[in-house]
Amino acid sequence: MASKIVMSSKTVKTSDEILCEGELEKRSDSLFQVWKKKRCVLTADRLRLFSGKTSPAKELFFHSILKVDCVEHTSKYVYFTIVTNYYKEIDFRCTVESCWNAAITMALIDFQNRRALQDFPRYRYQRSESEMPSEPGEQSALGP
Image: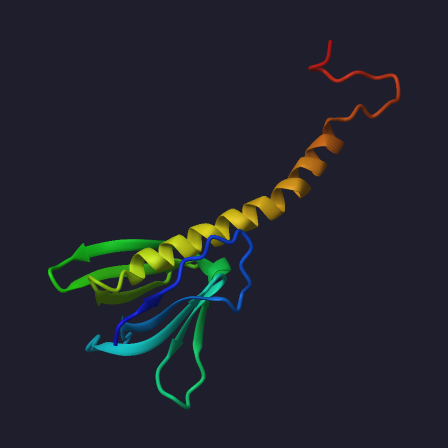
């Protein structure tokens, strides 16, 4: 099954907008660590993994993902690891042509950038308040 990658030039993405959809293989946590095919849907804020048609999706939200590490390239597969904020490592592989690792990495970077921009005005406001003199006639230590 081929992956469908949709890149948008919009700066604002909704959490329901599908960026990529297709098949990805996840290594199981069991003793034998077999590769299991998953149908995946990548959106602006999460990666959904479907095991079957009736089972609910497992979701990896980007706010809980620390990074995506590319582990190895072979002639057939790209092996990569998603590292969560709690340093849990989840191993995946995809075909070289599908570029799932790049799509997930770009979506994660986009999510982190949007979150940083949302936090910036709040940080700037808090910082400007803390730099204000406590007394009306008092000057800042850095002031003239």
